[in-house]
Amino acid sequence: MTQATTGPTGVPPLPPVWSWGSDYATSVPGVNRECDEYPFASTYEGAAQHAKDSSKPKDNYSARPLPKTDNGAAGNILKAFMDRNRILDGFNGKEEVDGYLVTVS
Image 1 (tube, one colour):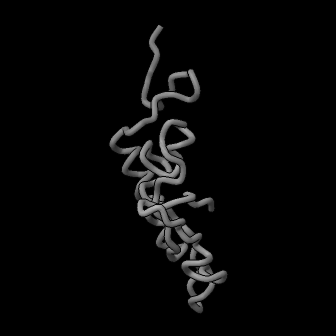
Image 2 (cartoon, rainbow, N blue to C red; image 1 turned 90 degrees about the vertical axis):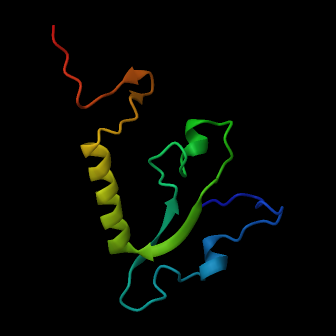
């Protein structure tokens, strides 16, 4: 994971390994962890914000290790919420994409 070069105070933030140790994903016996970010990468405000709009700051998100099963369950809940409430990006490059759109000709 890449971190911002400076934080709000001008002090460089610490990478996850420095903050949580090189074994952050395996440091709790019996708990497999993975790093996750907030806001969610699937939102325009999330970890992918800079990739979608290069004028936005790079690495403008928080991250922390979470139990892998919890992280996976949260991802499934978020996807189901977006599907049920029809929250769509709308475009794949220049092509309009809408899984609910039916073209009648």
